[in-house]
Image 1 (tube, rainbow, N blue to C red):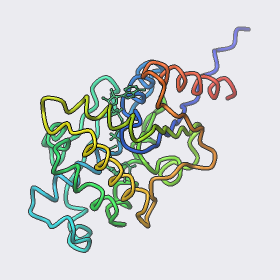
Image 2: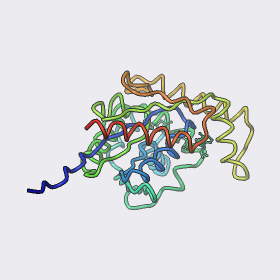
Image 3: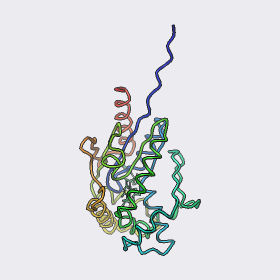
Image 4: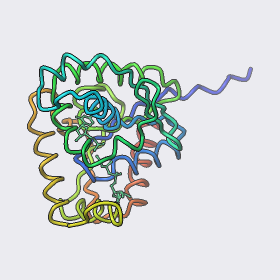
Length: 233
Ligand SMILES: Nc1ncnc2c1ncn2[C@@H]1O[C@H](COP(=O)(O)OP(=O)(O)OP(=O)(O)O)[C@@H](O)[C@H]1O
Ligand SMILES: Nc1ccn([C@H]2C[C@H](O)[C@@H](COP(=O)(O)O)O2)c(=O)n1
């Protein structure tokens, strides 16, 4: 008698690391290559920050941010080829990338009430991803999905990260390399230094230094790590 092929169990992959290490570019490509859903958790923190700014909430006032945190409805689309993010039905994929949101997102995301709400949202999205999901952020391996099947922590030198970001900004906003490097390091320090689920490498994460790797090499490396995990299941 023929037996039906065993279904491949859904795999959960967590990718964390500081800003500009290549999390989003790598995650989208890996998820696409392997047929996984994709969740950009930084976009969710940016979306709630955008809502606070739009609604005149002082983002430096943690109590005011906490009081308002449950009001916006944030919805993330998880297609790696066309990820989406809306707040109360408004497409905010562009507005969440402004300099103003970038400069305020660390303060908003440090508020414990914000983290509790966004973490719940992230867990429910991951639980609903039947074919598996790749979730990228700062605290996915340590806090959001501590039982993830694979955890990857991307790093890169501040110089490499600043050069990548300056390349992106060219023609749009200021491209001063030193200023870009300083802004990156300030955000890393705030994200690593906060009390509630700071940016950190999980003990069981595989660290990949991307400073001297092309994006394609990083993608291949992570695809191999996922395939190795899948083969063991
Ligand atoms: N290995 C690499 N080599 C060269 N450029 C890269 C590499 N990885 C990513 N990049 C480029 O660096 C920039 C930042 O990458 P990406 O947005 O993926 O980083 P990130 O870690 O998600 O950053 P953030 O956390 O700030 O969103 C992009 O322009 C991307 O194309
Ligand atoms: N899991 C996460 C993801 C993101 N954040 C905060 C900290 C970041 O500076 C900010 C924006 O993230 P990015 O779009 O640059 O990846 O969001 C967090 O606290 N936890």
